[in-house]
Image (cartoon, rainbow, N blue to C red; front, top):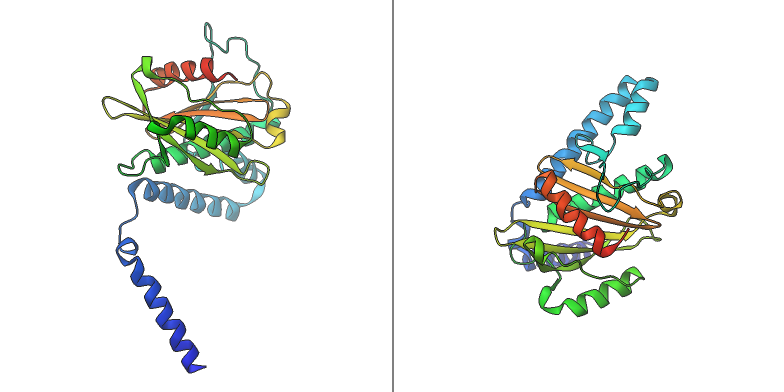
Length: 245
């Protein structure tokens, strides 16, 4: 048994040595910021549960999540592509908000990357679209934001939240000034789509990062980035017209 334990210890040390330089790297700033917000929210939730009572429970129901301190709302489209769109029903709000949260987290994690912001670059756009379409189970296309001053960087496959929506996709775009926005799309739980036709166009914000998102049936779309709200809305309108919703 002593020899076996010694062998295990040796194996562990050998495995650690393979990637020692990675283990010693500092946590990326976007991930550290997300972790800090989650930790803060967990402390607040623990405090609310200690207070108890119905008021605390109601506050928890509406305040839980990574974007608890952000802003949520529908955007009035007086002359936009979604003018007259019906609000999303209450039973679909939570899955849609969770979808928007996932889009913002994915942007916060990958947009700052310099060497590996995407899995497949824009040079292989056709392959990228075919691969992600197969994984998401429906034909996809990349929006063209060239007229808006953004060029495709590439895209990647991301995990969903359940077996029913196990795969999601992210397309990344960059301006000449180095600004990056991402289009996040994928299937939502069935409840999200049952009452979401036509879908409400919604806005979410956390700090400097915000997103416009909408749901078409059981499929969600979100445009995320650190741009001012009017500019992000302009891009979202372009994406909506090209991808539909």
